[in-house]
Structures are given as structure tokens and as C-alpha cells.
Image 1: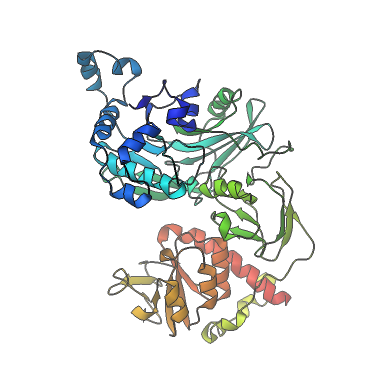
Image 2: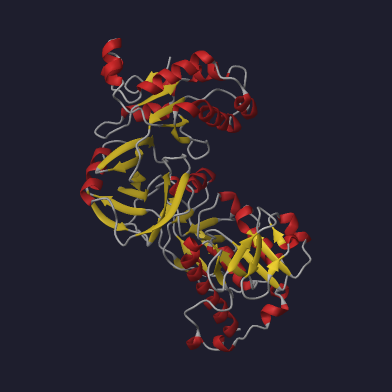
Length: 526
């Protein structure tokens, strides 16, 4: 039998569902759970991910899930009413859609599904359950099925952040962009029952659901001020003050809805600090010390801990980003949502539990190595505009930043290769052949031609910078979508032209200009 909100057993339905059931003073959208025993019966003998994905789920349990789904928009009083009364009231309710996730303390490693309708609930359950078996050799998970609230904003309130503060972070629309570490959240710092600081990013990536086909839509939004009134933030934090947990929430039309509850790691804050700065968010504890580009990775977006040596500082992401959760689990210090500037080769120190960066002595030249692989044609570009610091241009010059399918001097995509595209300039060298369109690392290291397009959208982040350093051609084009600063830096050094969709062009131009100036100054200093 499924267990409903208000009657959750921790032993049967898991700790996450039990914590969610204990929330008081805040709105919790209705939910039910499949107990561990329900899941065992549901998947039968299937005990590994592939078996779960391909199994026929128990029809008895599926019937019970479908029945519960139809009642998730009802209160407990309506559910328990007589059949006639329940049908009358229930028939007027909009069941809407549900979110499905594992009821487990371990966060950030299991799949979850949002906006699930009755027609695809079985497939969604299979995918969520199979993700549990990918990480566990034994036992079965309990599953939470919760009514979706279409968000205005999605975020989290973290109790006990760097002492006795509460950190609130939010993004417009669905929280996917925050979890993926591809946008900067609005942040609020709460202490002594008041908002004592806030910070709004210049822009965010807003993800919403297309109601026609269920697909996610992404667009860039901008704003100079935070979106949620301080009074609302304070009211929510007062309700959390007496409880030893943090929450994820949906904010819609002046109301917070709690969709997840978790406890902040006990060893996260070993001591109380001075008032934290919201110029960055400390997402994982530990002293950060070393050289940028070697010990410390500095990037535009977040990355998992296996992709950097000692520590990570990223311009985007927040405390509840998936890569932040992984960093805490792996014990690697990290700072996200950083608004300052760092240079490769810079030596720095950040004390335990702090976000204040202290520059150490002994900065290495930030040009990097492997200059011998730059192509001759790129070296012949005019340098008279970069002969002195005073003459540095305010527009991108040496490295072209061009739109896909734009007007004038642009890059056009047309048949006949790759995903139906060839790549070429509208007014210069002409199209790149199909052999020069590189979408796999094996193609990069085997390439021996004069014109190449490296489509970074089709390659994993790991290895991209090395591929950019390795590729040698007279004309080199990097096709990107929201690259991190390290990749932009390497593209500038290796004389790539960079193309992107129009929506990301302004941000990309600023990033390239910043790296060009650094590169020119380093050459002048040398």
C-alpha cells in the first residue's frame, strides 16, 4: 500500500519522505510514497539498471499508483470521503503533474523526473528506480511522488550557512539551471531574522516547460535587482529557524512550497565566521591554496570534483548545485557564484569556511605552454593595435566571435554532413569539408588538414582544453554553447575563431575580449 503525506513511516518510506512529512508552518504539496516493499514487488526479480528499464512492472502496484495519482490533488479528508462525495469533489480537481524521486539522504546522484503525467508514469518510475540500482548493490529504494507546482522561482534555503546565517538562493523557472551549474542564482543572506544582504546576477538562464510538448525551453533573462521580497524571505526563514534542516522550494505568487528537505552536513561549518560576502558562495569546506590553472580550476560553469586537482572556483552555480553536492561528498573545497577576476598562474589562498581570496606572492606568467602549435597564418595577423596597453581595443579583434546563421560577416551552417550541416564563412575562406568537421576526440587527434571546425557541443568537457591545444590547422573554428572561461582562454591562445548561437554571443564576446587583453599584456611583459 502506498503511504500518503501525514502517515509516513521512516522505516518504510525513507528518511527524505519522513523529513518532508514533518515540515510545519510552510506549504508542502501533497505527495505519496512507494515503500521499499512496494518497489520490490513493482520490479520483481530485476535487480540491476538494465533489467529494471526492460521489465514489466507489477500490474497490481501500477494500478494502485494510477489510482493514487488521480487523488494527489485531493486533501486527506476528500480521499477518505464516501465514494460518491469523492467522485464529485475529485472530478472537479485538476490532478496536474507530479515529480518523482528517490527518498534517500544521498543527494545529487540519482535521477529524478519532473512534470510526469499519467501516460508516462511507468517509464518515469523505471528510470528513477534504475538510477538507484546504478549506485547500490543491494536493497530497494522508497520513491516519492509529489504534486508539481509550476514555479515562478525555484531555490533553496540553507540553514547554518557559515555560522548562524541562512543562505537563500533562487533562479527563475525550474531549478534545473541551478542544479546543472550553468547559471548564477539570486542570493539572500539572512541573520537575526532579517535579510542583511542580497545579490542579483546580471543575467540568468531561465528553464521552463513547454506545455504543448513537455520539452524544456531555455532563454536568457536579465535584471538588476532580486525578485523575492525581503519580507517573504524573512517569514520563510523564521519557520526554519527552530528546525535542524534546510529546504528546497518553489516560489509562486507570494507563497513558498517545500519540495525537499535535507540536513546540512554537520562538518560543513567547523566554526562561526564574520559576515560572509555574497560575492561568492562557499559550497564545500576546506582551505584553498595553490596556483590557478594547476591546483585550482577557475571556470565559468561548475564541474564535478574528478575534473580538478585540489579546488574549484566557478562563476556560476550555488550551494545546491549537483557539483557542489559532489564536492562536499568527495571532500574537495569549492566556491561557486564567484563575481571577481582570477588569472591563470595566480597564487592564492582562501581560508577554511571563507570566500575571501588572498593573493599570494609569486605569480607565474599566465600565457601557458605549447605556443609552437599555433598556425602560421594566425601569427601573421596585424599586431599594431596591441603594441601598447593604451591601444587595447574595446572590441574583439584577433579572435573572431561570430553568430551561427547571422547576417553579414558570419558563419553559416548548411548541408550536407554531420547533423546535416557544413560550416563556412560567408565572406572569406569558404566551407570546411566534412573531414574537417570534428565531433569526436579520436577525429581531433587524427586530423591532418588545413581547415577544421571543433564542435564542442558534441564533446564532453573533460579533454576539451587539451583538444584545443592539440589541434593544428590554418583555419580553426570552435563551435560552442556557454563555454567556461578556461576553454575560452585556451581558444584565444591557440588562435581559434569562436562561433555560438546568437543568444550567447554577447557573453562570449566579453569573455574572449577579457582573455585577449590578458594575453596581450603577458606578451608585452615578456
